[in-house]
Image (tube, rainbow, N blue to C red; front, side, top):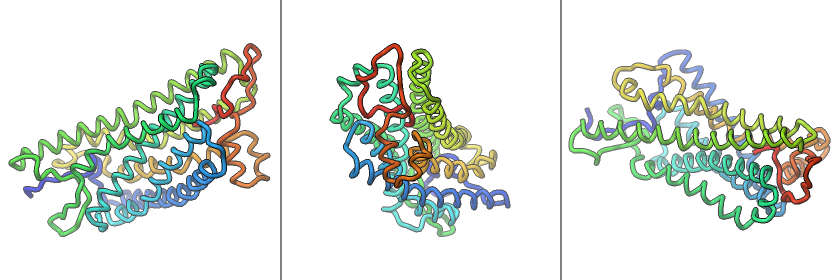
Length: 351
């Protein structure tokens, strides 16, 4: 065994290519990633242009702009991952891009998830406490708050700074993986360190990188839905339809990937040394490509799930996005309260 013990980026990256099913899943994953790249770059690029340069900056547009920046920055790295996927996890781009690409992937994926949670909290505050939001929900505060998700995401990528590198296997192929050459005096010590590290990292990523933001989104929209029904402030089903679509799409895209990653982390030893649980290895690419696909969905939801989509078909795509990013989600009316004090850029139609 090599003294330079190394391990994949996460426990489920022991990808299996030994059957027709595996090859079909690989091709399917590559198609999904390719579609995500083109739709994500075009869609998020348009949102960045509209929200960043065509509209007045409000709390809402700042949040959506940062979310689009996160998704755009991620999708531009997909060609590197796509080529590596096609080469069966080999990495031909060198040490520097090994670190840079995967750090960019993690920062922007986590940043996107955390920003969604922040936007959900913002929507919840606007609906539950409109007077407080009117007095305190400012553009300057929003610019400070959105820095938090980026910092939090950067902290979660610290292991990539420390351990990620390129390693050449006995066949001469280069892989971009974690290396623990300096973490122990023997192969067994380095192996134990690697397994402990990857297991801890996987559990933390599942809890902080998925369960926590998903719980925040669910709680916030549960409270919003309760307020909507209790106060009868909405005279249309549009907000409920859009909120449901956003939450469900987020969960559908991310949960399979996070579950496979968590199981691969828990069963890491069995996958590495006994060949057990090969099904997890086969599911790595399709579940990760589905998670990646979430990065191109938001611009589609902004346009197609916004208010009066049929009417907006006659306008330019830029105009549709401007309305989707600035309008109240649906016409909101409260027979018991004066909602004139709501912030002018409040919307509860989408995250």
